[in-house]
Image 1 (cartoon, rainbow, N blue to C red):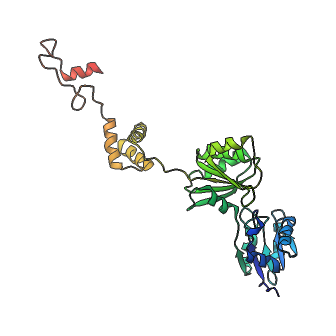
Image 2: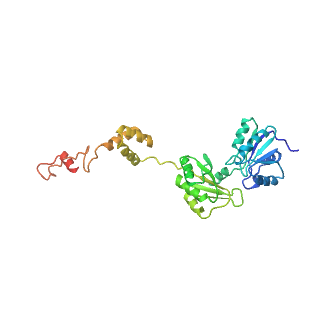
Image 3: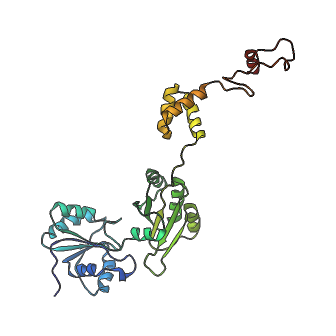
Length: 314
């Protein structure tokens, strides 16, 4: 006799390609739930056939969610509702978070049955840092909107993970290279399937690879975080000070550059004073004053004074 599930919402992760990845617990939940909320009933019907069961299914997707959600919430008071997507973990770039939010607000039981997730699987394949990552879902398809979205996350110090379709892959990689710099990246596709692959390289190299040969299958792009910023050099500081001194007094110029470059304000102030002082002439000593020649060096009995020499050299 099959166990009876307590009323509530069960979030069930399903395979992203290999049906063998369905966990025993997920199989048990799908076999006993009173109703299964599905993204596409045709896809989920195939999964249910695989485990040898038939369960009532109710479509729940972006186009009908607002209409269907209240009825599902009401049913959770006395029935078990399993939520699945076509592949992977529900809510991850799929509808569902509002259903979870409303179920919790109504006081219903909410349980997750974890399992496959294409974004996480791609992270494990790409060989890029995994201690901090940001999942972006799909970027906008229009060029300007996509560029704006990339600009928003350009400075995020984390590995980036996003989904993309084959026909748009090369354009997306090119836009990422332009907006983020030519970072290391990986393109994973057909994860857990027979032709699974993960190609790595720079964003520009990957864009060139797929420009004339868009791949098939579900695609995940993984992009390395930005490299460590180069510490400002003496030349950087001098350049910034020279520009700031055209607009500001020494003290304020030093303060502005210190804040901008993260350098010591007192040291910058001292350097700014040096930059504002007259530069010494070649062969001069002290503060730009050239010493008078010795009598032996002088071409006349009346040597030219240092001040006169300095004026003549200006």
